[in-house]
Image 1 (cartoon, rainbow, N blue to C red):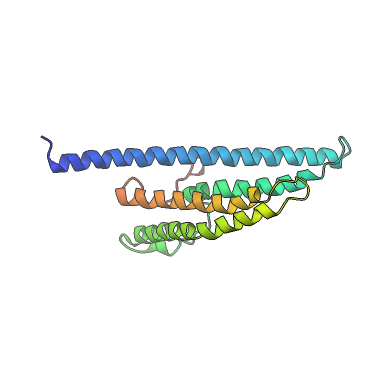
Image 2 (tube, rainbow, N blue to C red):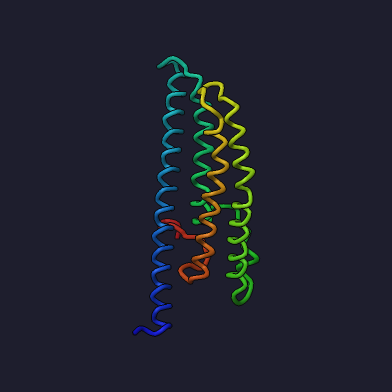
Length: 184
């Protein structure tokens, strides 16, 4: 029979693997959605340029689609920005503190971000529901498809912040931004 310490370590390694897999899957989904929104922006802007230069007849919906796709890009990319350190973060003082104070402040920041994001989900859901009574003038779609970006941004940001907190507690990460290899 295995000792309690061995069982704890087995559960801990399984939990680390589960969190790592979930983080990787969420990152992949967020990257794909961000890339898709960026592709929609590129296509809409090219169509808009072709229309303005007289190559094709001008289409009024391209500008509106570009704005909506930009909202989706920001919503899906918010968690990725948190993960990579591209969100606004003033850490010049906190990282210079002695001992494990920088780790504590990164933990506090991640936990605060998660709590704040999840606390705003209910108002964002209400805002999304308002969009069912509105229609985009050029595209003719219900605005709830646009308003839901606020809800998506909060859920994505809250999930990534929660995963950072869990990673810091389990020791799989230190809360520092994950930098891409070309940035280091």
